[in-house]
Length: 73
Image (cartoon, rainbow, N blue to C red; front, side, top):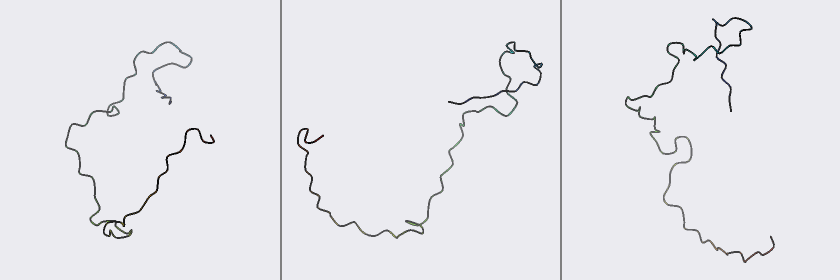
């Protein structure tokens, strides 16, 4: 949740009447960009300053055991 405070210079102090719709100052409204999307910057090397890429990782044997019905919880 958030709150937006829109200050109205023309409203008198202590006047709590409904001032109507807020008039956006020029250049402050958001709009949909319909132009071409910029290409994102990409690293030229694999990994940059981190470890260099190597071949495929070695295969790992994994043993999986399915838990029994309601065993201890």
